[in-house]
Structures are given as structure tokens and as C-alpha cells.
Image 1 (tube, rainbow, N blue to C red):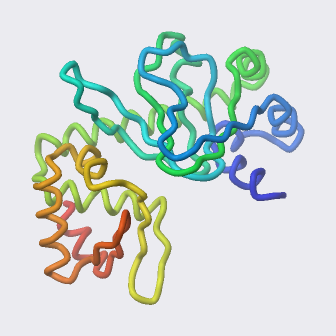
Image 2 (spheres, rainbow, N blue to C red):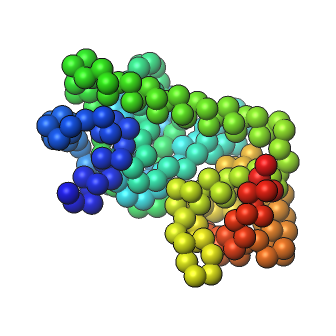
Length: 227
């Protein structure tokens, strides 16, 4: 199994498939490459395919009436997006933009629908992935109401660490690849307030701030602050 197959096998779409089914689905894949900052699709576009990230990171955003951008989430290798329109064929509810150079596997809905009709267990896996995303959205909404900004910053960093972190001798390295403004959008607060929280954590020795990254030195303290 090469690296691409290994990443695809972790995606909800492929997790329920045997080798025969996975190979059949791979035959319909289109590989897409994006440069950093390049837009894959925009909010309001017609949705005709879903995507699995093979390498790199993608951010999902929505734009307010006054032009402000809200960062809904950051996704990395093995994660899937764009599947909502497979079950609800209306325009895209968010924009997808490459945070880094990205390689994607694209699967058209016209290829997927007959495939899923013969394999309902795969459709169940997709619905489970959608349900998990809805739970995460509900958690984010609750945090915006009940959790202060430092708590939200701690929680987002821990979430990013769980998906992108690599343990080193000096702590857990989290290369989130986000600008300060993007990190603030992800937390749902101003950049100044988020930077103040990060500086406080750094002053306490809980983390070290690096360019588009942090090193979590005291994960236990961060977990307590996130509660």
C-alpha cells in the first residue's frame, strides 16, 4: 500500500470497503493539486463532488454580509469534506481554500450515488461522519456562549494537536500553518484577544509560540484550561 492508499483508507468513505470495493472507487478518483491560498470552491457554488485530503491542509470558511470571514475549520490528510451536497444537492454552504500546498482526491456525486446504492454500509459511514461534524459544530456553538476566549484558544490548540501534532523531546509540536488572524477566526475572537491568551499561556510556561505553530509544553495544564 502506497502513501496515497494509506491516507484514503482512513477516510470514512473507504473505511467500510473491502479491497474490491476500494479499488473500484479509486478508479473514479480525480487528483487535484492546489497551491497555498488557492480556492477550490466558493460558498454558493454548485456542489457536485466530495474530496479527501491526501496531503496538506484546507480551511473551510463563510463570509458575513459585511465581508468578514469566519473560519469554520481546518482539515488535514485523511479528512473529507464536500459530502453534504451528496445528500442535499444545494449550493455549497462554505468556501474551501488551501492553507498549504494541497493534494486532493475528488469523487463526483454521479459516480458515488450508484456505488452507494449497492453498498448501504458505506452510506452509513458517511452519515456517521456528518453526524460527528454536527456534534463538533454544536460543541463550538456552546463554547462561544459558555467558554471564555482563553478556554477556547486552549481547546482549539488541543484539537489541532490531536490531528496535526508531533511529539518531540521539548513538547508536542503543532504546525497549524495558520496566520494569527486565521487562528483568531477559528476561535471566534479578535486577534488581539487571542494573542493575549497565547502570551499568557507562554508566560506560564505551558507552550512556546513559533511561526504558524506552537509547541505544547504542558498539555495537562492546557487541558484543564480548556474545560
